Image 1 (cartoon, rainbow, N blue to C red):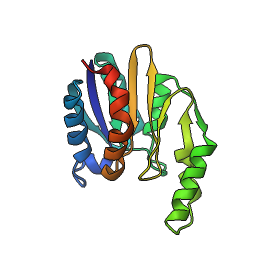
Image 2 (tube, rainbow, N blue to C red):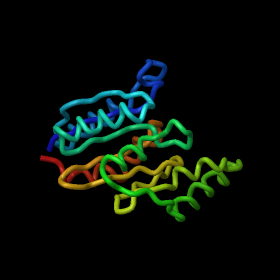
Image 3 (cartoon, one colour):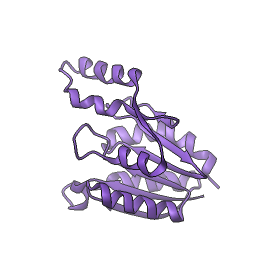
Image 4 (cartoon, helix red, strand yellow):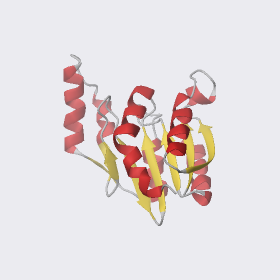
Length: 173
């Protein structure tokens, strides 16, 4: 199977943050036998992300996005991926409660905009985030798969190791 990585974030695109996520995911894909064809970085722009995603889906079986799952208005990866793949987003109460509990465990109040992270794709496979608030997901349709992962490396790497690696093995050669 062929895969691509799309890293999302203006801070990555402009070089303000080093993109360690793409290097990690590339190594992990290679280790499980998934053929990585391309990797690109897109700023926090829904139109450019949509274009990059559609192009990637035109030539690869699996597209993995990193970043853009946070609670702010410019975090639109999940929304764009669901739109392109034809998945509806709906608030998941269990995830909303996990996010509330996360903030309580840290001794702080949860900003209401964090509940945006509880909006999950109906019919998708959800990957719990045991190290932060933004769950990941896999969207499978018509022989294609988009996997969305959070950007912080301390969340992405454990999620990949705990959930995504096993999920992706069915796509490995």
